[in-house]
Amino acid sequence: MTENSILDVLKQCFEKFIPAEDARTTITPLEFTITLVFCYFGDSKTFSLESIRRFMIGHLNQSISRGAFWERMAGNRLKQNLQSVIAELMGRLAASVQVSETILKQLGVNAIEVVDSSSITLLPGAKNAFPGTRTKASIKWHASFDILTGLLVWFQLTPGKRHDSKCFPEITSLKGKLVIFDLGYWDYAVLHAIEKAEGFFLSRVKSNAVIKIKKVIQGLSKEAIGQSLLSLDLSRKKGNIIEVIIEKIHQGSTLSYRAIGFWNPVEKDYHWYITNLTAAAYLIYPLYRLRWQIELIFKACKNSLNANQITSCNANIIENLLLASIVAHLSTHTVFQIGREQLDDEQNLAISFQRIAKVAVVLARDFIMFLLHSSQEYFKILVNKIKLFANEIFDPNYNQRETSLARIHRLLLEGG
Image 1 (cartoon, rainbow, N blue to C red):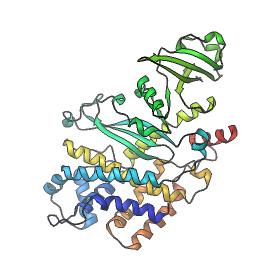
Image 2 (tube, rainbow, N blue to C red):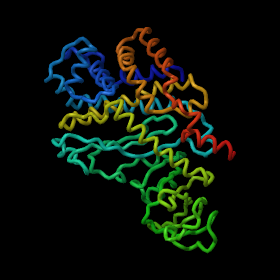
Image 3 (cartoon, one colour):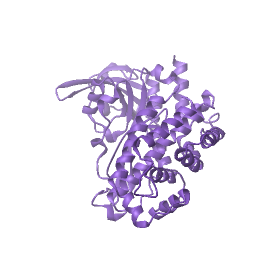
Image 4 (cartoon, rainbow, N blue to C red):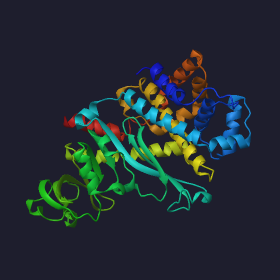
């Protein structure tokens, strides 16, 4: 997709749902929403509703009283607008994304997604609407990201107390995809459902799981067949990759999956991974390591897009601020799409979503001017600046330190 069309998609997603005119207000809903979203592009350590109001006044040269600003921030209309923009952006950006298909073809999947959550601490006064666990109040952002593009493909906002296992993408949406998740989502029913939906999963094995070895593929003698996987003494096997087929009876169904063990020299024990993917055993741990990318995306959203700067106890304002940050994250995908076209294949494999967010911070004013005005001048300025910063969106040390994605790519090519 060209830079013209990807930026057009961004603009259309705002304009489709948010009115550009409103006789009742001096600041239109479109102006209000866009400046709200892009004021979130910044490494501010002290963020408040008042600073957002001042940012809005400064960029639009229009006055808005504290009362009117608060009323609009707490309104359901703003929430509905932001939710509509997010849904449209997720759908249209996912349809437009172009990535190298080498990794996906070699693995036999059409996408790699990682599911996880991140908690954001709130003021204690928000505890009734958003009770927390380690803190009195928190909101939890459950999400699934396409790990090759960093694009959000599913999300849910809940009180911090909600357990991860209660929130998961629609299983039918995972057909043909590899979904990677940690122990917080461990559930035989989930594994079985993903397989039935013709999807693929990769997860750690819970330490208290009772599963029997049905078949030995490598690393163990046949005497291990019939024994409980996690009860074996494997201290003499350290360093070897172990692969077995495990069997579990779950709700009347016999589940049979691959379990691959990798020696962990720090804990001096094997870490076990379960999957229905057919990729070579040595690829499983490097693939699971891609899960760390979601932590980096959350970190980028918190540090550069201020997703953790929520200084209100009003439930609607809390949700609206986080939704605005999610729109900001989706908007940075334009930097990814345009910037990556300037890079070679190795640089593409070293793209950092944290660095993309930092580049977007610098371009916040340019995004606002482009989205609020129809002039081609603002479009050209934004495109040229994104291209100018293209060499800033990937890890500069990629030649000395192989990225997780580059490692997967290399191993697939060597194995193929």
